Image (cartoon, rainbow, N blue to C red; front, side):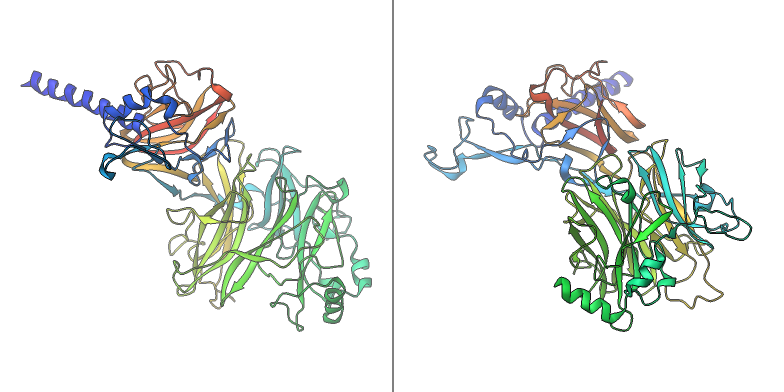
Length: 562
């Protein structure tokens, strides 16, 4: 009986491997070997999948599965009784439609993309410890970024003394440059950001209360790689303009005021620039005639050579995310909605605020962490949206990436993403978030307590392509910038992954077929694919190939080539 059981198991394994191979070769579990041989014998007539207009490059910086960009859409090829490709137009020789047969090419099956929820990993004040009398235990960051040119992390954070600045090479040891010459108590200098041209702002007559001007009020800071040194750091600050001056300015420039701007408050956004992140010069002319009292995120998009601002709008009584772009940081048009609650959302949901970011190390993937606010409970969650151009946004499926804590936690109700998405030195991804222990509009005096936490994802595991059971997909024709294929992967105990390299026409490359691939099992941030022990990719036409993946009970988070 033991021998019979062994034979059955071996037979089952062999049959499973055969099906596994056919699935990879044909990209569809229901195809038969005939299609495989037909594809080989009629290679000159095999159609090329037409997804190559936006050729992706796979290099050492991991490319996450945040959308379908890494997954071929697929198409059908129609063949006649002789197995030859039928023309779309012109004579085909068929006597009946039933003589035509569809051959699926490159279709994915059994897979889905899902956002992954973050792990909460402490509070911000543990990351940046208190050192000076103007600081306190529960300090909160306004902006955290990584300056690639200087190889340094920079943070602007709120404390009792105002907005302070610090920098670090490793997110552990922080330097707080004491370059503000204004005395604080018995200290002659501080690292508090300050407005160096306040007298100029007062003399302009543009501001109702020039003494109340703050650096980056309702704004965030960014590094401008296109700017001269004295304007390398930029931000926007919300301030109340003098209504008469504001209307005269708008009329002179021929620009409309946002409907949110009232004569009572006349709140609009003003540009501010700095050479060191501490001493700031506010330009006394607004750059965005819009009232946005929740964090406005601006950056310089190197791909389009324009400044892009993301801010809060209102649409039909609900908060939404708006976007504006300009060649001139000092002059933006009014924003237009790019992400707003539609009929797929419950009617009581707002998109309250955004923490837009570019994926670390990549300029071809934009992310937006969105505060989704539930008016019924006055609680919120953070959801992740993605965009390839910064204008068209879609939420990643799979639910929130950050939720409130339990009833006894300091973050039990309202959570707000902070513009702070960076890669830590160990490769993990970090996002700061502010949170509170009461509903958003709850009477706050004496009851509301809050803090700022750190959300963390293991390296490049913000989203994944998942197969709960059997699944497969094929990538577009990728330009490979390395000789080895690297997977960020996690399999169940019963799962595995196999990888096949194909040419443009879906033909397996010699030595890199599914039968050659060594099975991948386990939890690996950077697993090098091997085929019979060999990890080197063969010489490729145009250094390009398709990657075909068969997976079972697996998550694949990212691909790279080294």
